[in-house]
Image 1 (cartoon, helix red, strand yellow):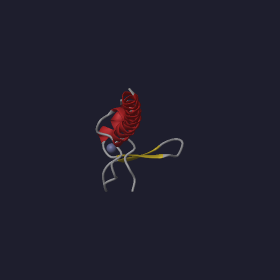
Image 2 (image 1 turned 45 degrees about the vertical axis):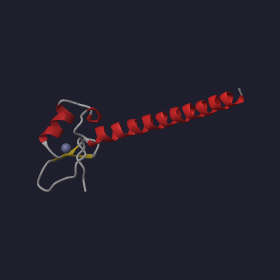
Image 3 (image 1 turned 180 degrees about the vertical axis):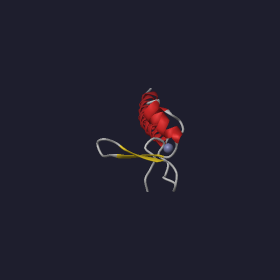
Image 4 (image 1 turned 30 degrees about the vertical axis):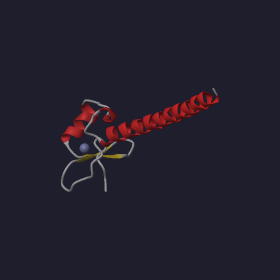
Length: 90
Ligand SMILES: [Zn+2]
């Protein structure tokens, strides 16, 4: 199944436009909204909230932030255990 080049939704029968570029690549646009945003307005699909690319980018960033947060939590936990060890020695 072909996906829309801009928004990432599945192709529905009898809708949208297949655009063949000079390089031979076939781009499918599900609606005039997607076609205009990509070709006329030249918008970045990763910056528009209604596209799949935006959600994928956002989830990837959230995953990287979760990784950093987990590392910070582990550091804090180890620091606490070291502090407790020092308190116990006193
Ligand atoms: Zn689309």
